[in-house]
Length: 169
Image 1: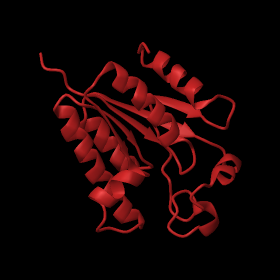
Image 2: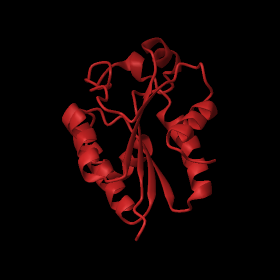
Image 3: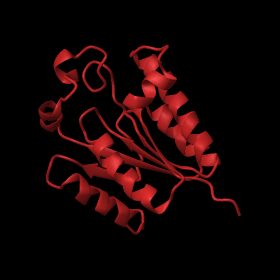
Image 4: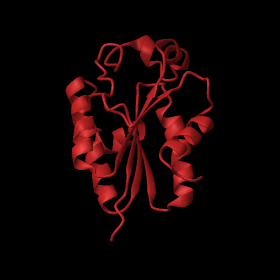
C-alpha cells in the first residue's frame, strides 16, 4: 500500500512559537523521512497569496490555498509541517475532513509573552492583526495544546510532541 503523507499543522497567534517549534520538529522529521517539507505561513504568503490582503476574509482564502497545497503534497506521500495562524474554525474543520492523516498542534502563549516576543511589531501596530483587531477562533479540537511561555525550551517541547505522536528521534 502506498504511503500517504501526514500534515502536522502548528497553529497559534503570532509570536507563540509556531515557526520555532515547527522548524525543529521539521528538521527531526526530515532526518527520518526524506520526503518532508516545511510550509511556513509567512514564507508561503508571497508565493500563494501575493494577490490578497490581510482582512479576515482574505486571510481565510489564503489559508484555504495553503491547505490545498498541504493536501496535494500529502496525497503524493510527502509529510508536511505547516506553521500558520489559519485563524478560523472553518479552515481547521476543512483540514480534518479532507486530509486523512492530520495532526493539529496548538501552540499557545499568554498575552504578556506575545507582547514580549512581538518581533514583527504587530501587537503595537494593531491594524489587521489576528488576536488584536481581527478575531482568532481558538482551536476547539487540537490533537495537542502546548503552552509556550518559556518554561520549556523549544527542543523540550518538540521532545514532548514526539512522545505524544509516538515518534522516535
